[in-house]
Image 1 (cartoon, rainbow, N blue to C red):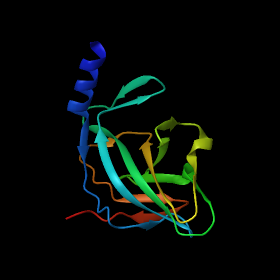
Image 2: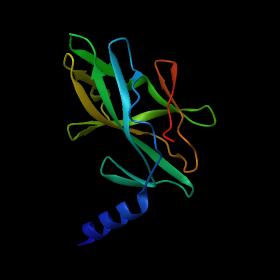
Image 3: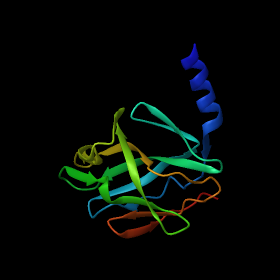
Image 4: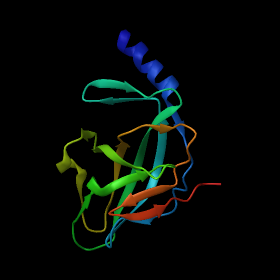
Length: 152
């Protein structure tokens, strides 16, 4: 019963969303592009069987990305150099990557394989909470800044 109440409270207070144009694909590397399928801001997160609560006015950022392999060879996408650039120009690294319901903070799981001419969806969560009022605008991949298009 406690778990049910906890889950209800978790979902009722935790999720807010920012609208990113999900029709636009961005270049991950020369063979793979991606789009932000979904993004949420949450007051709480669970990591290593613990629940963390962001300070008042802050939120954890999670995204679902759709990755598309445009080549005829299997590609490995490495998320170790994937960051969120916040309003203070600080890089916020990834805490975890989720693919096929397999959650991992293991650096090897930060490398995802995509078969030739296929798409996969991957969930990611950034390590540090940011201001809940902040508009997410920039992703940094291997030092390249990618400006996200907001939905009007």
